[in-house]
Image (cartoon, rainbow, N blue to C red; front, top):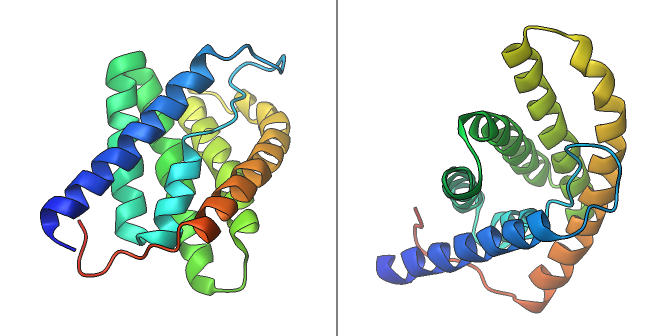
Length: 169
């Protein structure tokens, strides 16, 4: 695949992740716990991990986080998103390479790690460990929504048997 095609593909996947994130932000909240989200944009990150590779998944997620924070957030939301998003992506990459876990399990652990990263960032920014109690609630949401994201990403990965050949970013 030529470099221009690779960049265009990354752009399309990043744009889709941004659209999914925006859709999620305007959906009525079905839960009564602040900060709980579905993580729809992670469908594209998990897809990229399994079909395009580690560097591609990391790049797409990083670009999505930065652009999303610039469009819809602020510096604090950028810090939380980077902490959660990068931790979850790194852990998902490691689990995928262990080659024992299926895509749903990788996504569930990624969802949990996303919440852990955000809680750690919050504890540092607020200079308190009292926020850690909130992790129990977010742990459950990470498992539930991570499983849903993993199931959806698994369907897409099976239906789009595309593998990036040659390089990438």
